Structures are given as structure tokens and as C-alpha cells.
Amino acid sequence: MLAFGVLAVAAAACAPANDTSTASSGAASPAASATCAKDQLPLTTPGKLTIGTDKPAFEPWFKNDDPSNGQGFESAVAYAVAQKLGFTKDEVTWAVVPFDSSFAPGPKKFDFDVNQISISPERQKAVDFSQGYYTVKQSVVALEGSKYAGATTLAELKDAKIGVQAGTTSLQAVQRVIQPASDPSVYNQQIDAISALKNKQIDAIVVDLPTGFYVTAAQVEHSKIVGQFAATGGTPEEFGLLMQKGSGLASCLDKAVGDLKSSGELATIETQWLTGSAGAPELK
Image (cartoon, rainbow, N blue to C red; front, side):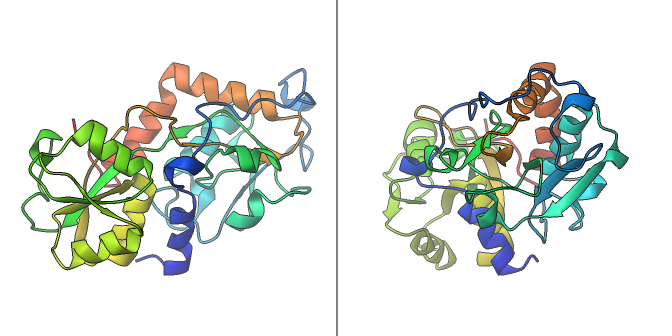
């Protein structure tokens, strides 16, 4: 089990509905490099691509607390981006960057940071982002062995008593996507919904997927992610590669992420690390 303090970072990455990101790119800086040729990139250390993330680096975003092994969703994404920029694995180095300091104003000791950081207008005042590499999905969490723990479709959740936090994208997702037969139980604080689940006052809670991993690992014993699903409507929350404000890498990282999307490689990485091995199947 991961340390509570570390997992709290995962929850911090995810915001209520009125704090979520713009739908796409963090907008390439005007100072972006005119070329993405490897030898022309403005790097922190010449000849090396320096990538930042927090420590411990936890699953399913990384594996075995080792960002350099290429395993886990964000490690795999980072190396796929590096490859698009022309770097081999041994030309990539990792820097430890606490979550909160990554988007603080000022110079950075990395070329980009990857750490479940939501793109938001407030953060864009201090740093630059690539276009989103992950659109945050919603997750259904239930107690192991409970009535709805084995659900494989959204339709199977219609009669479930669902708990959700007020003012979040999760509440919108319950209302628009699951559309349960009875109104969801809405709580002012997420911890209240979690307590209701523990006490079996509700059948399941709906939270964003990063928070779902946190809940099942650190907050509710013998709970499981029943599955994940995409929210509809509204502005989606997205994670972006974070750079120093005015970074000359902005346009090149945007292009790299865009190429990974259009080729289908990004979707393959997501399926491998956030669906299959993470035990969070898609609910249709």
C-alpha cells in the first residue's frame, strides 16, 4: 500500500468542476523553438532530456517507484514523447520535483514535468503546458463482494444507490451518463461519501479515476474499482506536460503529444496501464 501523503498528491491533481482545465492545449509559447530538431532544442542539460516527477512515483502512473523503467502510464508516455523528440532511453534523466513546486512560478530544473497535473487557467499564469495527454475519466468504487462490485456495464448500476461529492465533474457524470433510477446521495465533502460507503449506507461512490486509485489503496479497505467510464458534456479535465513559462519546447511537446494521439499509441499506452494492469475495466 502506498503512503497516505504520497497518495494525497493524486487527489490534489483532480479538481472540482469549476477548477478543471481547458479542453486542450496549454497553448504553445511564442518563444517556442522554430525547429524540433534534437540538436536545436533548448535543454536544461545539453544532450539530455530532463523529466521531472515526484517521489515516491506511485502506481499505476509509474511502477516500482522507478520512473526510469518505462513502466506505468506516465513513464511510458514520457519515453514515447522522448522518442518523438529523438532521444534514446539512456539520453533521458529524471529529476525529483514535488507536486506543488512543479507549477510554482520561477525557473525549473527540468525540461518538462509529468505528474498527473491538471491543466488549468490559474496554473497557466505561471507555467506552460502541452496539449493534454490524458483526459480524466470517472470511476465507480464499491466494497468487494457487494451487490454492484461485479458490474461490467453502466446499465447494471441503474438501481445502485450512488454517493458523489457536490459541485464536481463526478456528479455531472452520474447524472448524465449513469442516470440512476434514484437521485444520487450528494455530499458536501468527499470524505462524507467515503464514510457512507464504509458504513454501507450507499452501494458505490463515483470519483475521478486518479482519486479512485487513491480511495481503494489508502482510504477504504476491501474496496475495488468496479470500472471506469468517460464523462460527457462540460469541459474535460486533462493532464498536460508542464514546462517553465516561455519554454522553447512548448510547440515541440505539443507536436509530440499530438502525433502520439493521432497514431493511436497514446490510447494503447492508456489501455495497457490504466485499464488492464490497473484493474479498472471500461464500463460501457
